Length: 331
Image (cartoon, rainbow, N blue to C red; front, side, top):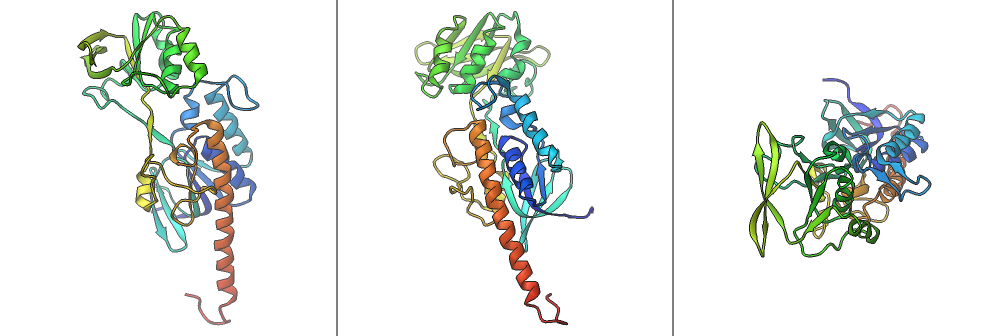
């Protein structure tokens, strides 16, 4: 087995919260490692961002590249591999990465974000990339001049996806299971109302994916209270139904989970219920506003807390060393 790396702060993730934490942690001159497989997190695949201060009209991927470039200037190492396991190992935490790398860290900042929800229907996974997509901003251009496509969801991402998709496909259906859109920002709802080729289907659920393994998705079966079940012929289906916090590592560590939101509970310093473990970004209940700017802010705060914990632990080590009489082993 390869040698275990000894570091001060391990940051799990590669999104806005993770890079902001990496930037601040490195500036505090503590040995830091950023580890994660999905570069840029949700921001990188979020398309055009218009509300990040100082960077009007910037693509999310480009914004994340700027985050990374700033961290790279400080020579902060990055492992393109997810953290898969963490356990207490004396005064430190031993983390194992998917690529087999092991590190001992005094503090850990969890910035692993969320996993996009799926419809959990037969053939959904098999037809992903063949008519089924989970990223409107990534795949909308593929539907240029197509007859019809649909977006499932009722939040900002769903409305943004439908409006974007309407620039390419002749007809776009926005499918929402409730009877009214209440979650999207008012400005997005205004744009939606002005986009003539988007048809909103309220109180509607997708109950079946239609198609074949050769052709992929060719349509969907929907259910509406007043009409029962009907079929829609589609060239593509985009699932923008929100996301759930990634809780594998938090559950391993026994972190407190907010029972109302399913998110990792943190205090104002981004401390979790376990000493030395911090969390930032969409994983946490620290704020209802899940945006790049709030994720970055939380990353910075978590880095300060992690740094202070590193100093406290190292100070305890130094006191233990100086209090050991000469010639007497401290083991």
